[in-house]
Amino acid sequence: MIARQNNFFLVTLTFIFILLVGISAAYIPNLLLYIIAFIFITFSTLTLINEHNIKKITPYFLVLVLFQDTIAKLLSDSASFITYIDELFIVITLPGAIIRLIKKGKLNNPSIVLVIGIICFFGGVSNMINGTPFIISVSGAFLLLKGLLCLFIFSTINYEYRDLIRLKKFIKPLLLFIVIGTFLDLIFYDTFRGILKTNDSFEFRMGIINIKSLFIHPGVYGWFMVFIGSFYAASYFILKKKIYLFSSTFFFLCSVLSFRFKVILSIIVILSIIYLLLGVRKALILFLPTMIMSLILFILFGDVLYSITSLTVERYLDVNIYDSARTALYVVSFLIASNEFPFGVGFGRYGGFIARENYSPVYYEYSLSNVYGLKPSDPRWATDTYWPNVIGETGFVSAFIMLIFLVYLIIKILNNYKRKHTSTDKIFLIFTALILVQSLCESLAEPIYNSSPQNIFIFATTGIALSIINRDKEGVRHEKKYFSNRFFP
Image (cartoon, rainbow, N blue to C red; front, side, top):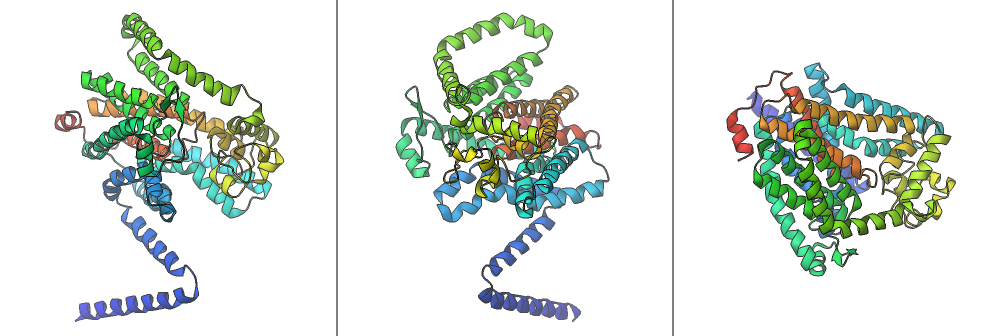
């Protein structure tokens, strides 16, 4: 009887709530949308406090983020909200991460919180000094820090081996479609891009189209191919199976078809890191074969490397600072940090998405409003860099702290991979270190730490790696041989 009364009470309240919302929505524009959004976010946040739920949706989330820009183009402007999936994920999972941390009563990775705090301090004080509107400050801070927030979220989740297997099962089939897209884009680029609605630009170098495949930009394609190539390179380094060597070589070569200097630089640095990880004895033994192979590759692809390097120097180095948007952003960021030392101009005011959308007065002050690609009428390249964004908005100190933190993560992960007893752990940790090295190379000419899908994949992977490092400390059981065989058949 009591249960029936409670049900009747809940149904009545629900009916009254829906009625009030319906009446209010008729008089207040978008109210219904805001209420639905609030309910969805609240429900999602409560659901995702449980880390098992996050692990279940993470593979779907990663796939969606990877192709969110392509999906948005396919569905036209009405689906532009899809490009905010990564921000939504962070908003609904961050409270749960904080709650899990409070329950554990222990902060395993205090350096993440410390770096976030330092950047918030310098950026926030800069905003107060310059009187930046609150909404611009908060929005700019969130976009600049969302990569670190993603790192924090995933570092609070205990990842076991079956979770890694599940991630691999989701990503692996996508590679086939991306590779097919590579060849279609290479041969039938006009038709293929017309179907995907990514035919807004066609770039050719040495008579070959710059490949996009299923992505909207050659840079994203090149980054992802190196990302996957690094995984197989790490697998070969540990397991010495030729299939992994072949796979790594294939994906690295595919990445070169993006014809991006930063991609080629990343591959060279990654291979150098792997060579150094061999140890002194093996490195000396393989020195001569390595030099011979390098010479052969230079003979085969030297023209491509020279062409891409020359074009990069011509566009960004051998120019007047106000003839290149990227060069101008770098030079002016140093001027700002020097003038405002030890602070910057504040969040949302330089080099980021918010500064572009709410055209920053700083651009007028430093004459950037006259630079092609940074003009108020068409600031298409105003978000073309990462470090100028950090330096200009938060100053030299926080930018230096961020750089040191990234290097610290690489060193920490490489130091811990040797302490692991299982191939799965070792491969994943080396893979993570390699993609962090890759990201540092690309960050020189790409907003890789605050643009999707790169930042989500980089920091989610790094967060999982930190979780693996902390697993033994928290008393989580070691990997069984069964799972190792399943992960690397």
